[in-house]
Image 1 (tube, rainbow, N blue to C red):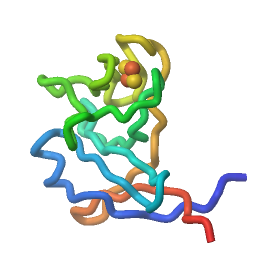
Image 2: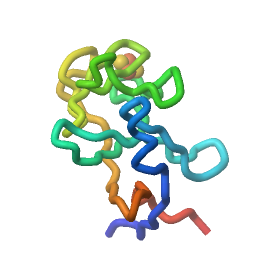
Image 3: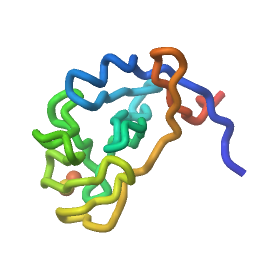
Length: 121
Ligand code: FES
């Protein structure tokens, strides 16, 4: 049985226009949930954990910089893995065929929300 999830507002829709993707961090301490939100080719919002399946590094070295210059693919700044925006599957690089972990995402008004496990009591 999965843990109950709670919704967290991570950004506004307009925040995605600047860089095409938006990073977020939820929780405190050494292990917050770090992720990012991006639109896929069809304009559908997707959210992924900001952790590369290759070596476990965060994908962005520069804040909110998750996409290739043409914004077609998600990139990992560490060793250059490239991921499809709609599936999170690595299409080129050292972890080809593996995928980013997806997070449920929704929109309420202009707020982008993700479903994250409730904090431990
Ligand atoms: S950690 Fe992402 S490509 Fe190596």
